[in-house]
Amino acid sequence: MKTSSSLLLWLLLFIISWVIESPVTAQPLKPPSPRPKPKKVRCRSRLFPACFNQWHNCPDDCSRDCYVDCVACKPVCSCNNPGALCQDPRFVGGDGVTFYFHGHKDQDFCLLSDRNLHINAHFIGKRDPKLTRDFTWVQSIGILFDNHKLLIGAKKTSTWDNNEEHLFISFDDTPLSLDGRNWNYRNSSLLITRTSATNGIAIEVQNSFRITATVVPIGADESRIHGYNITNDDCFAHLDLRFKFYSLSDEVDGILGQTYRRNYVSKIKVSANMPVMGNIPKYSTSGIFATDCIVSRFGRRNGTPEMDTGEVV
Ligand SMILES: *[C@@H]1O[C@H](CO)[C@@H](O)[C@H](O)[C@H]1NC(C)=O
Ligand SMILES: *[C@@H]1O[C@H](CO)[C@@H](O)[C@H](O)[C@H]1NC(C)=O
Image 1: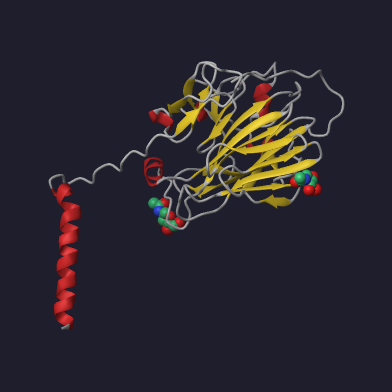
Image 2: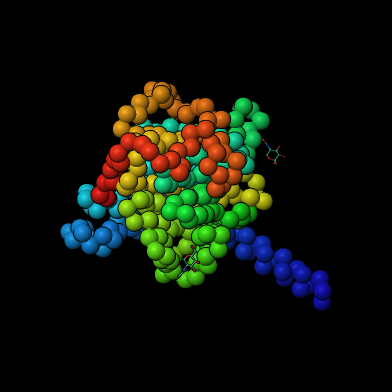
């Protein structure tokens, strides 16, 4: 009895595996993993009635992460415009120049420092035995403004499920619970809204900044192509970010911040295959809310008049 039922089970398994595998046998190579469906995005600003609420598919280059430029009424990759910070951190400066800043894993760096606004990033990563640097990603950012402290981060996770929330947020040391698809949070000049049902938010502080943050994992393909050697215990969930600033002073500094100064002349070799911003110690800081990097401007009183770096999108 026992043998016949286990025989039946084997037969069943054999048929199942045959059914699953049969289309592949004609093609010895593993088929490419199916392209994920592109994300749909729309212009949400009523100031652009001709484009408002029209849905667009994200382009192939960034099928999961794009937004609609309401002026051109076209979907645009989030990581290619000024103020972007994506992947193993690739920045697009306020001057439009793309560069990498590798920093060190498990350390904090000053992204932007101005009199009333300071933003640090916590880097996570892996040591590449073949290189002298770490592969790094931004795991969280700490924002100081108007005596407030805002922390936005990606939770450490082993396997990625996009329907699960991997974001965490805390405001003035109190964790916010991001309940529901339509969750939002308002507290005086701060407004946080979702940009997608999970893992995407927009943070706005009136007359100061708008940041969109998306949590993304390192996928198996990405790991293989870049040699990250990502294992099953950690998918290195991290933030892709887009910054927009409305009232920076001309003293602003930091890895990204300095690129918004009017007189900023990039020292980055643009012709290089992978232009890198060096001088890591200059931007190093002792904690996610610390303002002790060499280039810190936070809390300074006197200075040059304000400049406006705002632009309409
Ligand atoms: C607004 O933030 C303050 C801390 O800065 C907190 O004490 C207060 O409860 C918050 N209000 C709301 C409505 O969340
Ligand atoms: C990949 O990572 C594992 C665990 O961290 C390590 O044991 C292994 O040597 C790494 N392989 C390569 C090629 O770096």
